[in-house]
Image (cartoon, rainbow, N blue to C red; front, side, top):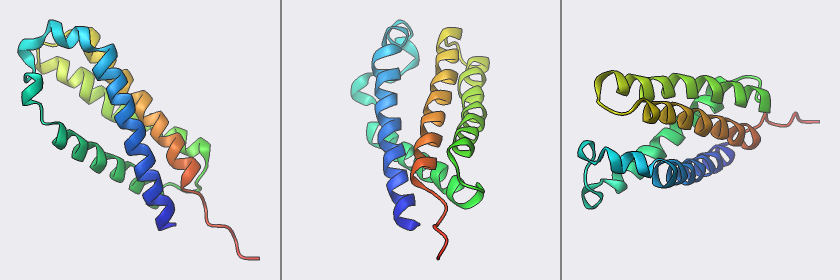
Length: 136
């Protein structure tokens, strides 16, 4: 089971990193450029820290599923991903919008991005971390 959990953490980390690049590095780039005064210049970005944050998030995401979700199934993985995505996406997107002068379109994109990433994470985690086979 430990091996599956470690593999799931790696899979979720890679998936989230790829999705972050697609969402933030490509799709949202025009919005970030239009609001450049709000962000660090690219050469001052703390990308190493961002990868650590993503790895810790993936480990916690998979750890919660592995230790608390019963029974383990694709349906429960998707439900977990949906709830996690709503629970993180609304504060990230709309919560930030409420206190920072970002465009509403960016706030909604962050919310939807968190939802997509969490659904993908739930699907990956549930497909890797499965119930132990019963001894015959």
